Image (tube, rainbow, N blue to C red):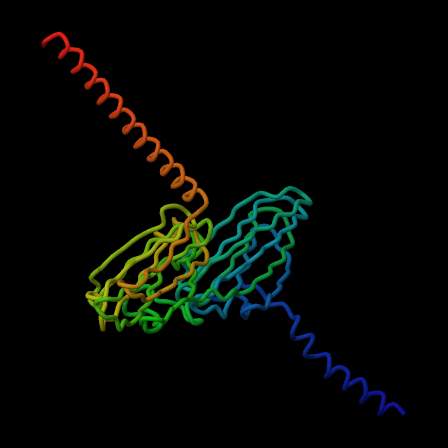
Length: 333
């Protein structure tokens, strides 16, 4: 009677073993070389929790990030006994990119959000250190897909530019990209390449629209790197346009460079629209804001009033002159 019972127990253990392995915690190391690995996947959050004592360092290696992925971290630390705590993030080459130092009182809780948008991908190292006291911490980590046009990460040079298509009359190319803010990544420049098949009577416009709190600059280049034209945001969130005429763009390849000035223009998503049109027929329409319409209406009214006033003044002066001539003529002058 015991054999079936033992078999059933064995089967139950086999079934729940994968669950145990899925929730098993990585063992932190005391250095980069011995760091415990936390494997990350896009869209899935990994959780780690542990305790930390005075003069103790915990290292974790965060793997799985590819080019154009943003590492999003949240480290919550609760202090059982007060003291200083340090949280640092390093790249695969051991370069420190983020560093937080703070003092916790007994029973205090602090949550530190960290993020980094990587241009090349690779591993990261997370270090949590206790200078004094004893603490417990919880880590949640995930990867966000911030790749550019067509699900590819646009390169930072002409040689690594991402192809977005052929700009021809009647065909519109549209795509989006993503750049990091200063101190939140190393992705500050995107290069795209497109072809043109334009006649002399045609042109192509490249419209760049940054997110609301973002300022960008963009330029168009020939394959040898020579810059043809450039433009930039007049204010955060303001769209701008680059234009190529057919006598320049015909049967050529052009490179579009989009930059947020080393992150100082802010980070986030932007969109690009490339449209070819006929110079003799139509041009891309630019919406007129209600403020611009009202200003134009007032200027027209003012212009009409000024012209009317000048006409009346001229008539008055002419009438006075005629009257003066009649007066002087009557006295023989």
